[in-house]
Image 1: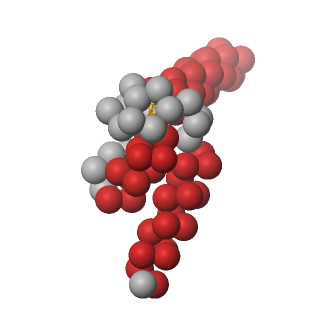
Image 2 (image 1 turned 45 degrees about the vertical axis):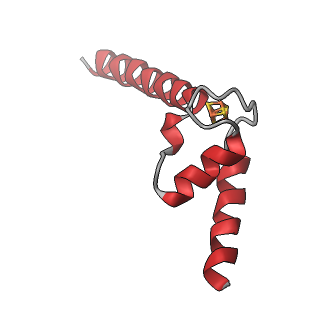
Length: 74
Ligand code: SF4
């Protein structure tokens, strides 16, 4: 019972971090189903194409910033 409650909490926490578009692009029919898959260990948050896009954008911005910082130090 405690384990089930803990899993439910995890599902709800993960679901809040997902975009809520229920687009199905990750292979799960909804963001809620995706959160359940993640808790079961059958998926990762980065399987969401929107989360992946945000991560790639963030990494690209960090690389540009690093490059600019290195150029200033030359
Ligand atoms: S790809 Fe992302 S937004 Fe679309 S259903 Fe999956 S978790 Fe939700």
